[in-house]
Amino acid sequence: MKKYIFILLATAALGLTSCSPFQVRSDYAETANFTTYKTYKIRIDDLKLNDIDKDRVLNELSRQLQTKGLQSGENPDLIVNVKANHKKVTDITNNSSPYGMWGWGGSFGWGVGMSRTWTSNYNEGAIIVDLIDSKTNKLVWQGIGSGISVDSPKSKQRQIPEIMAEIMKNYPPQRK
Image (cartoon, rainbow, N blue to C red; front, side, top):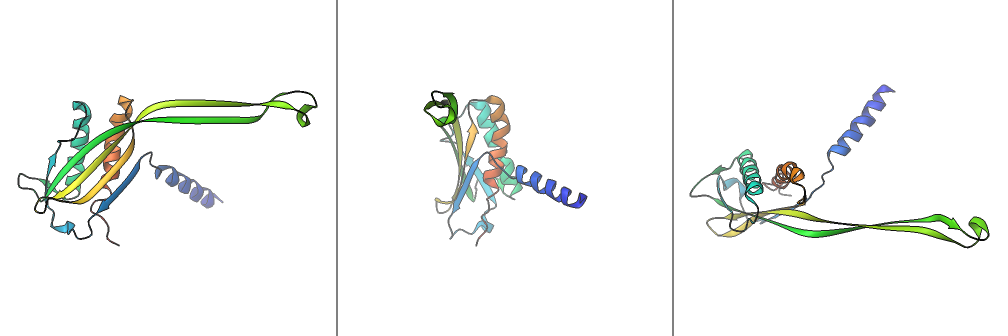
């Protein structure tokens, strides 16, 4: 019996830890030979972030690329273009209940139910990583991650490294 409880708890823990608050996707050029890419250089022309967040993104991106076996260089195989954006999101939550004040006839007669609607507005951020072959100047891989809580500095501090790791988990792509 203890064995089954342990397996059940381990499965539940694994299920909880595998859930990510981010939406991450990637795409790649099937003609690209990813084993030939050894060096990279980061280009930040479109990275419109404050200096603190920019450092977080660039440091974690460099760390992730290096764990993939790539080294920074002046004559790179890959140009890494990183962008960030955010959008305003409005969540609407409706809580309808058939219970409330009842009139004539009790619960089988006429009456009024209760309904409550809540809205919340927040900003959600996304990071886009483009890997461009420097010889052909063509996009060979793109990773996109969204779901960063832009309005909370503490959340950004924790989430930027997490989302960069999630994005780069898909590089190099696993061919089918």
